[in-house]
Amino acid sequence: MLLAEFPRLPLSYLPTPLEPLSRLSKALGGPSIWVKRDDCTGLGGGGSKTRKLEFLMAAAQRQRADAIITPGAIQSNHARLTAAAAAKLGMACHLLLEDIEADSDRDYRGNGNLLLDRILGAQLHHLPSGSDLELATESLVDELRETGRNPYVIPGGGSSPLGALGYVDCAFELLDQAKELRLAIDHVVLATGSGGTQAGLVAGLHLRHSSVAVLGICTSRSASEQQTKVGKLCDQTLELLGCTRPLPREAIKTNSDYVGQGDGIPTRGMIKAVSLAARSEGLLLDPVYTGKAMAGLADLIDQGEFKNEDNVVFLHSGGSHALFGYRSTFDGV
Ligand SMILES: *Cc1c(COP(=O)(O)O)cnc(C)c1O
Image (cartoon, rainbow, N blue to C red; front, side):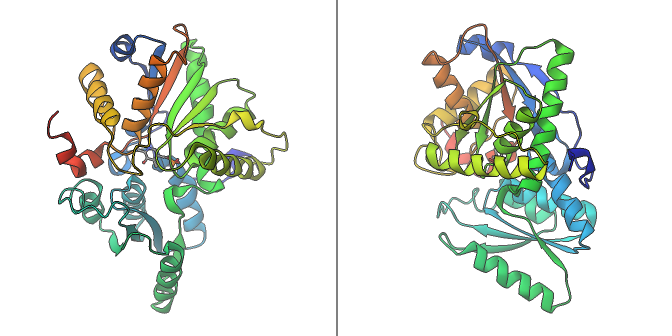
């Protein structure tokens, strides 16, 4: 089935801008860096997940769902944006929020995305770290069905082949913008977590026979685990779109040198990168994903991984609202 044939709801402002970051490029002293502003998708504060939700929520509506269930970490952007999409479509939203960090910080546990989840009217179900999320999801599905509701489950990060279609579309959008700007993109650098963003983007570029290289900076697991995860999802996404031309394994590039101690745990590189982007471009990154991805990009430029004449597009996937959950992290900044 072609991308255009999938049911889809217009939940995002598209196309998102593609802009040069000249002061940041100069500060880092390497390739020309551009930013794809997927933090500006509009709905519920914006971010990458609205692209995935256009397809996922359309599927939910087709199944006449009246409640959405999705899991995430406490400061999950995906949870916030799912709550926003559900509100817009008049559905209930249940968020299964896992304590990943076992962090007692007051802002982490009450501000940022969590505050917005509550304002958006989502029902929050807190689970201790290490909980069986699948089991918790199943029992919530049963519970809601018993009260006559028709729940629809969206996987963590919206990262199913259907959700990844949002980033297949983003790949097409990016290539169209590059053509219009006469910009020869050499690399796309992005943060990768649940994998759907990178999988969809790589699938879209493959469908268009593009030679743009995509590098995923991991925020949670080892580079090889992430490569397997993204590769599998990318294959499934291509299959969903009826593409039988195999994807070369080297199309899935992952780097996990900038995770630090773990998912959502701040690093010095992240703090530095968030400050640099803010002070050189007025661009607000986030502490969990794009801050670490930018820390990676800055370090890789330092290591000479890019040519000075390269054009590198940094995908800003959103999440700056989480900064309010990380107030103390930026105390000395
Ligand atoms: C979810 C998210 C990502 C990671 O995208 P995946 O598709 O989960 O890999 C990156 N940045 C932000 C801000 C996100 O919310």
